[in-house]
Length: 483
Image (cartoon, rainbow, N blue to C red; front, side, top):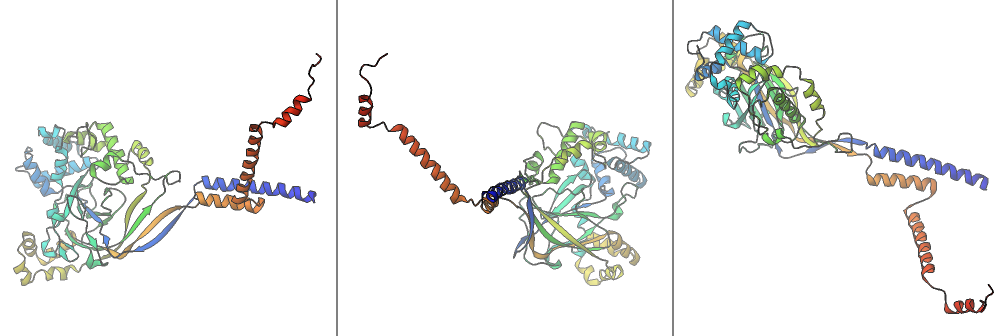
């Protein structure tokens, strides 16, 4: 029997050891699975909707601002001179070549104002003064430019921020400045945000530097920084009605030691804007630090204490040349170290489109009833146009957008460990039990046996020999031993 028993025991021990090793190797590899669960909800928080006019500079706003800044020649400037100045500025913003003589004239004119060489908030105010205002974007009051669940909304429902690439942008339902987050209780287009925006196409500068015409839109969580100039979001074109059906997705990642290695570091950029950590915010932090290193000043906001804000001159001489369309290697390397956030929310927008019947549209707003009820300047200007001009105005300026939930519910995309501590114990214990017949009880019995043996050994050492035994030993010894 020993001929078969010993090899069998050896094989069992070998296979058991291999299986235990594989189990431990798999456990310390920290594998995980990703689950997707659909959760229904009766009430949902409506997301923030950020929009920017792709045309960064408004001719009307620039002309007004130039007079306020008291720039030379701004009082009696021709349309051609205005166009050339704006083209020169756009060439700086977009890193394109432009006629040297016009660039030089533009610099001399702008820098004639000594305030533009002073570091501080002037550059941010400078960009604000150039951009399209929310009042102009929502100026088509005869079209109900903003409604939320059938109720009228206004510019007061929007907050704004300044972006280096897009100018001044506007956010609906940002949850900032004391505005409560809006709730959705019903899905569908009539129970969300409906916008009829004015692109103000006549206020654009036709040039080779801004080829797009429309709005960039980003739907995002209120706690996330809106990186509107990035790859996320979608574009709206004039003369088109866009339907954005939203699906909310909540992500949950695993921290160290799992491969996702999620974290939520407390960075200055997040703290300044009161946003949660995100990859986009981390990228903006990397870019912000790079600009400080190159230009010695902060671009728009006083995020890092002790560093001055850039002046308008700093922006033209260093800031915009420093941030070309291709991001610098230092910024890319920094952004590659940004960890994934542990929890965040994204909104997937399914887009569909419809074109308005512009001739019927224009005739509908020429009725006597509307003329009586609406007396705004924008509506009067529209009525004074010819039928052909009305149709052209609608095609080139009116941008319609409906944002709504396709259904009340959200997807939870969660990472879960494949092996936790108890799974490891179960796997190792099962292997030992299968090949060696061991179990926890067997181990406890073995420990009990060892403990009993140890206690007996200690007792034997501590108990002295009995007196009778000592007497017998002494009696047996000789009284006068011979040495």
